[in-house]
Image 1 (cartoon, helix red, strand yellow):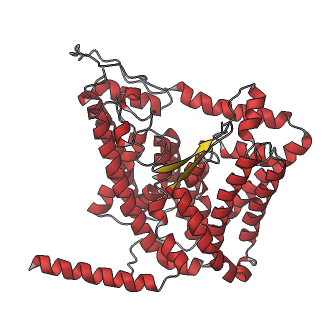
Image 2 (cartoon, rainbow, N blue to C red):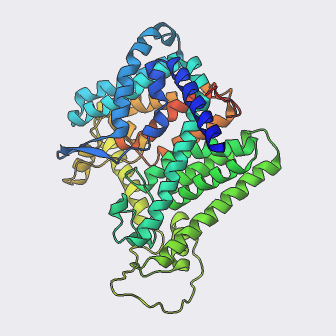
Image 3 (cartoon, rainbow, N blue to C red):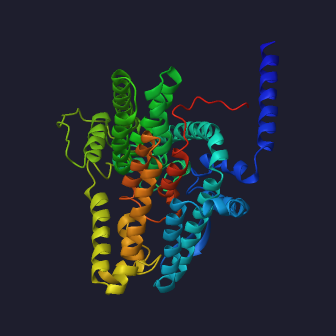
Length: 471
């Protein structure tokens, strides 16, 4: 009897969903896939070869963006008059057009053209969403539900990677990248379908902040579990950029959200609990790993030291000698990996030096979109020309000059202005802006461009995500 009732409920839901989808246009239907497609930023991918300046690869996320951009064209055309009235749209258009113009004098035009292709596709999607923002606003509750469900699935897969990586030598069989395997710190850092753990951490920012906001404005068991799951996986990635960005955004969220101090303190306590759970999982994974010579305490000590940039060191603890099995190896790192920070800061320094030494016209107009790798290689005398700056602000200054950086900063300020009706949404914007210091212009890092999405959705985003569509 119960089974029959369940089947009837499911059948009604499916029919209701079908009726709802029929009311949507093709762009809106495809947009509902976005919260799922963005997770596949690296795996699976199509290899198309490489040259001295870049690799040619297609991910499912890139393919999805290209299809969505094509479908967006009729929507943009229909809403062209409304779009032309928006100063915000004009500002973003100016930045996009200027990026395309700089390709003309780029020393790496092929990469510049392909980069502008991705930029142009995202621009078309932005225009389509902006022109239909009233209709998209009604889709937001469903989009958020899909995002939270897909994030839950990805986080479960991340936990599976952590467990499997502790029991399977190597770990590549479960999709782990070279820097993710247990041989690095003694435990796995999950990346799921992203290229590296820090990319997974960045992709977690939006759903984690939404889950945090839900927890601040209302409180139930499901929200607690969801928040703990997302936050725990963020800790497991050990992505300092994403963790610091979330921490800064959390402060803004708690300050601007009007709710009781007890609820805010409860969120902070749950965040601390997630950190403890994450560290415990890392310690247990290291302890049970039969291939790595480390233990529970050493693993936690390594993680804390790395996450704190070497500022926090747990007391050394004398451990009883382990029965080291044949083939066990010590982890590559037992604390803060200074190279991970030094490489990024050095790339920014080289890029700034190259920009400063450039002729006046290049200081103003940039060296051209896609040129950073070649320009930095010339500056250092290196033969490796595939490097990126790993700092969006510095890369924009180098490739698109003072004009490009001024336009970017103007877009950021305008975005803050657009978010004024929903102060808490600024926390999401701040998180992505902090991420700009750790990433730059990579197609497999599409999440760094979600800043615009936070503006166009934030203005009409409901204070509560409890609105339920009739499906």
